[in-house]
Image: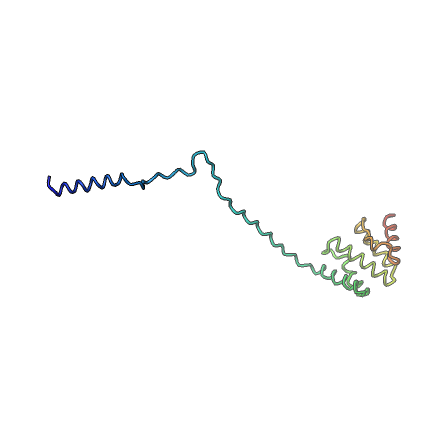
Length: 160
């Protein structure tokens, strides 16, 4: 064997032995998760709640606006103006029942306060015709002017 061949064999043998002699051997990766261990996934962030639906209030009808204006006139003590504004609203079919009852009751109050007691009683009678269970709020009961007219109207509509 010539020198070159011997040298090649020495180099190859050294490389083979050198690879076996290292202490940094490649270790196989352990299986994840280790056998028998249960791994829970990391907590997820809770889903954000849906924002509430935006409810746009319905625009009040012309009759509802007129009722609001009439009630404001009554509150300011402008009873004659309030009666003029409330009279057509007592039969306004575009108002719901509670709106008409409020118009009738306030009209009766204004009539009583302007000493139109017969008209006041007849207006209360209209309220009972619209709603047999019609009643005054506790703070409204026993008023010296409209209280007696309210009771007369109640008795008159119960007899019929």
